[in-house]
Length: 471
Ligand SMILES: [Zn+2]
Image 1 (cartoon, rainbow, N blue to C red):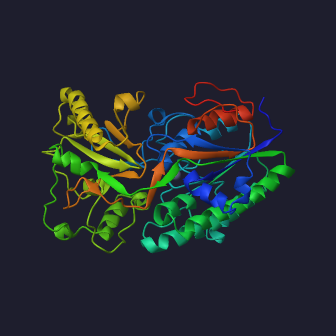
Image 2 (cartoon, protein in one colour; image 1 turned 180 degrees about the vertical axis):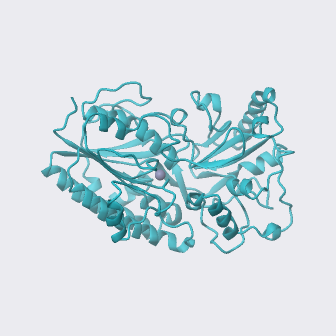
Image 3 (cartoon, protein in one colour; image 1 turned 180 degrees about the horizontal axis):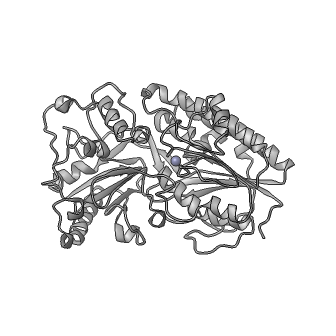
């Protein structure tokens, strides 16, 4: 029998990190967060991406079982790029287990909840929602209430860089209003994710807006702590990954090009003039393909009307900049991670089936030697090594920067240098947070442990997760 005596509330601080929290604690700025008995590190996934990590949160399983390796996935039989959403994420989800146990739950803004499921409770989908015109709420009627207060799912990708952080704080304010409203309703399990912290960290690391985002969230946490005291409820505050300042980025596609694995149509002359590719044109193509969601996850540091000096993997594929007659491998960037895909026969590429295994080892070994020489700490693993249970979509070779301050780029430009400036001030790392007053029994905590922990909390007995209960 499920335990219905106590309620469990989880507040997600996207990108919540000790790198930001510790200095703010020292200034005495986050009194409510600082109150928790346990302030622990929560290990994320590889890559420590928002979609990847929340899929693992919701299922209790690693990426090779959830099928989620980034916001976008590459088809195995072509270079078709797809966006992830709830339907692509494999495995039974936390809300399904809670539903079966007759518990009432409220999920607000979790990635990979679109399209929303009809659950016993409320579901408002998150970043994978195509647009506000989509049906992103269950029950349907509550959408009207959200519209009334000007609720937004994400900051628009069409904002200029200078506007993004303030906009993210405004979106956060509205989310807090909605969280507060639904918190008053009757439920057993409640979770809300605040994405504003992550957005401002990417764009304004070290600036006031980061402090502002945490202060807003801390104030709300204070309200929830009061609520818990009066309503037999427990609270956990978690993040999907940590975040760190980055200073330097390794351009994996420049490296593949230099080593002769990749050929583009981009000439060394001024890239600004080639094909007139600019953001606006790319957005139009994306819109036509109904891929508006990509607009949100492509770094927006160039602005919508200015021709771009560099394009990323998705844009290069969409605008046909890759010479697939001479390309054996191409990479996309996930946070601090290079995801390399082999241009196999299956993808209509030039690498024959029987050559794939050897090519993967060859690229892996060359990269290993390169980074040994550079004395930088990286994890380089093939699909089989890192994602042994994967069925499709997993990248063929994966390079994750453990080294602090380093990021990956996978951009194409006329400047073919191996080392670039990072496109953002900060990016994700694997050290997230777990704050709670609940007794934690385990010595190390991972994002995959949360689903088993939540089920144990409600006395729901389920097995066969990659993660383990922490309580
Ligand atoms: Zn995140």
